Image (cartoon, rainbow, N blue to C red; front, side, top):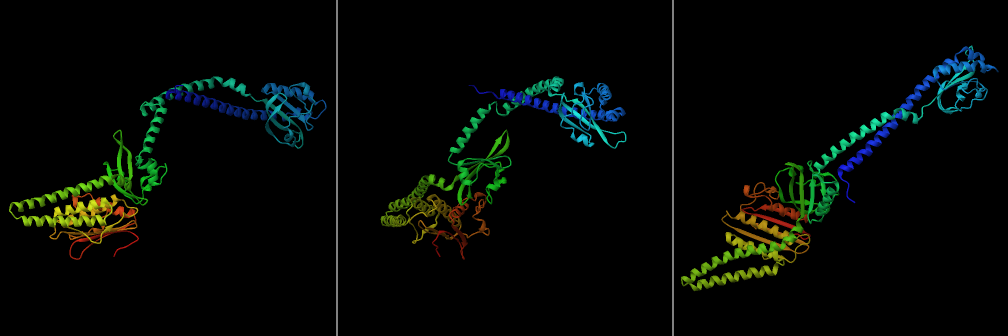
Length: 525
């Protein structure tokens, strides 16, 4: 069975809606007309009843044995003159003295709603009488002195039926129905065409399928995805984003979802993309990317992509190790080429003993360092970064010393090898840059750790810390001026924060600085 098109659905819906609207309006209209008729008929009936009750002949003959002979003609003349359905006069014993049907004369009035009228009450009621459902007015008849009640005049007007009202107003109802249907159908076609344009000429089931497919794709991705609207309220989260943020599918402002972080409305409303900025969320380090969503040349919101930093590091650890090894090989190659040039020059000058001594000294020194690091550092990524930075330091003329007490039997729980590579790489690079303009260029590093604790201390003989040292770990702050992006040290601090570690920096009394990192139960003095 083929699907019903949007236009046909709108046509059917409009037909049903207008049909029931007109029918309902007709019912209400007839009900209101009926109520108005009844009110008008009640006023008319009670006015006639009052007139009849004041006639002297009625007051004089009611209660007499032959009273009907004089009261009946009077009541019938008034009934015919006023075009009411019946006028009944009865005494205090409810004996009828007038009635449109003469066979009812002398019988007992049994309408059921006349009791109050026998107690000098005047009123209008609706009841089922001998001639049908009627509006009846009851007016007491008082004696000539107006002191004692001697009877009651009841004037009845048959109430119009629904069938009669429908027959009277059928043309109006049909006109309203046809006019409403015509307007509704024209409007439905207009709305359907407008909706088709707004939905790129796609039918609702096509839109539904497209949304389901896109949602399934978003949910299956291995990164957290959030989308915001123009007011920067979160309108979509995939499964991983819900896991990272702890939010459900609820519309909430970004600043409420990420309190006390850099992820604010102002950060999202910037036109440029944000690439891999760190964010500490619920004690877990995330890398965040932000892309503005542009629809018809207007900004419609933002797309936020979140990746767990540890997950990213676990995927990149292998590449990180290779990069460190490549840096190490490059630096060592450059250094060895310089040594080979020196040895070749000494040989050409027939100074073979000095060349031999240079070879032995260099070989012994490198073997000792490599043997020391292999014995003390268990993780190859950390070993590679230390070798690479040591060779780089030699190129820059910096004396790079690894403290004899250093060891790393195991990476502390909560950290990854990538975390330590990030920490050591950034801190050592900053220390070397601080020494470049100084006469003495010395760096000493001490690293100790196992699965329960981590301690790193880097000391340099550089220019010391600036006056704004307390900001050096803030995102975006750089001591390199325009050349820096202010990311490296911020990453170091956020990695330590996510593992409940501490980081401190101080300048030495003469020159240089010391940066200390601690995590875990064991402390170093």
